[in-house]
Length: 495
Image 1 (spheres, helix red, strand yellow):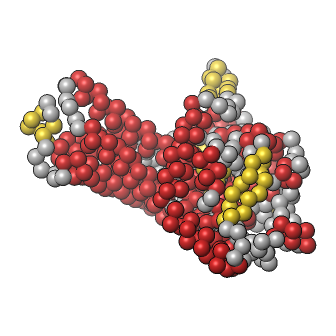
Image 2: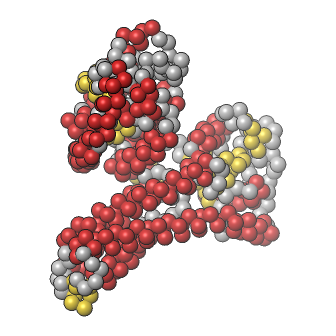
Image 3: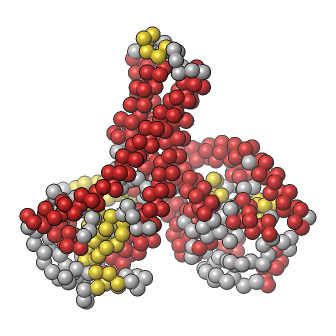
């Protein structure tokens, strides 16, 4: 099919629509399941709010509306909440299962709902019990985020196995196609599977990807819809713009009208998150303004507040776990329970990090006698480090050795989420661009923790950390904290 010019015909168009029916089923099922889970979470929150505030779901009229009780008011609130979620497009299939935007929309819908409640209460002079709202808002929000995270876990597991994904036809120059294909194949949670490519400069009907795998290459295309249908693709991805002219992009959109096939642009602006990109349209020239990253202001105040509150609560709640780990460490070799080490924090400031000791007492002195069995950049990695104790291997496997870092977070040396805290000798080897990791506080968890931990190469660790530094958000931090739980339980990359 290389270089084949496929003409669109009524039969082809009909085939597109028929073939898409079964492929659209999983999208409909995910959307329906998400709506039902949201409805259940909100209903539970409303019931809890009434029971906690009034002790019963009966009687308890709303002051100002004597004929309406809180059970009826809760039903109205459930409907309003669901309408808000629909209004912010929280059920778009492409959002469910990937990225922080899904959680951001849930947050936005929640605040919209209670903003409407406040306005209605003021206009109609209703006196809604503050205790009721104080339970309903946080409980509903937490339950929504938890069930979304659970649903995401199920969706991602299926996508890793090749299910619930869209088959992609990638168009572009060879380097751009390889880069896009590599990113898609490394992130199955995004819901795409590389099915075929269209590279005009390639020789032959096959195209070699970055990992050496060969895939169908259909060559240059004339009709986007017919080309996608010919290889059974659900989405047409344009990788970069070096070989695809603006006119061709517009024609692709026209050709896909009336078909279920989506057109996606893989921007060359890698490592720049959506919130930093703003459209500045000029007739005939769509400009994209990229906002510079900021490291101060309201966002950082919210982040610091979240750090103090959550780390303080965690230190209290997890105190029995701290005690149990301390006893186990001391009983094994009667050495010190804690291990302290100098690390580099925000803006290059040194601080002493605190961890549960997981190695023998003289581990640092023995390090010089060992060689890294995973020589990778500036990192020292040892898969079977003989210095690790029996108790240490267990607590490292589940990242329990890092729990004392919550105290560093509370004191302001670290954040709950951020880049990996580096050693001074590592920082001394940093290239200039890598030093941007020091623009924010290091974190107990971060993109490296949920992205493979010690399985990551040095380049991958740097890429993930720099992306976080440039594009972090409060919602993104919440997403990483939720994903950390799964990563820790799966012991992914822990050694």
